[in-house]
Amino acid sequence: MGEIVLIRHGQANSAANDEESYDKLSDLGHQQARWLGDYLREREKPFDKVISGSLRRHRETAAGLGHDAPLIDPRLNEMDYFNLGKALQDVHGVPFPGPDEFAAHVPQVMQAWHKAEIKGNETFASFEDRVASVLQEAARPGVRILCVTSGGVIGMIVRHLLGLDPTRMAHILLPIMNTSIHRVHVIPQGPILGGFNAIPHLDRTDRAHAVTHY
Image (cartoon, rainbow, N blue to C red; front, side):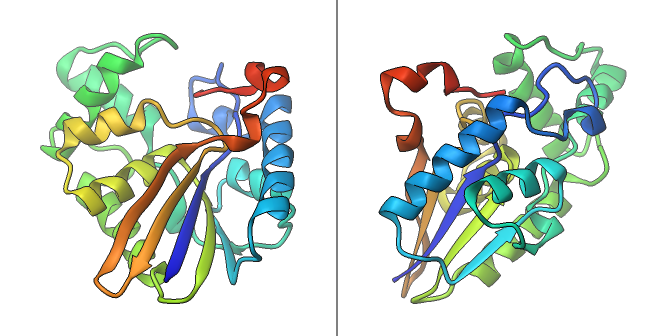
């Protein structure tokens, strides 16, 4: 059986209001990545390949895991949520949310984007196609691949595997934690979901403060 292990990046600059400002790890994000790297070295067999998105927060997370020179694949880059949120405001008058308001906002963005009522840097269909293509290439029997990516990519992979509608995909996106582990098992019938949103490296009382979503 092959396996794809998906890692969401560490905590980024959650106070940002644009993609460029957001795209760097906080001090805690760097620490989360180092803790996860220690855990993977202690508990996991070596990976056959390590792939990272091209965003700064992806590459910094990969380095924290101990992989300074991963293969770079921009198909693992996040959706353009800041511009999608701006488009939703322009088209439907929905203001961009504060930190505690995303539970209502994300489903509205996914629904409008899926219906092609709004568009950021790409359409919903093009985002889905690029994520599905990297999943298809990575799903190889007997091969273990580590992918450092973002929550939107992980949510889209889960949508692809489970056939979720945009609203249910949004509900998958909301709880994805920083440096969480998600597993796709590759069986003869194809890839299947094997694990979701695990943070064993943070599961101790002295690291409770390090469990973050944003």
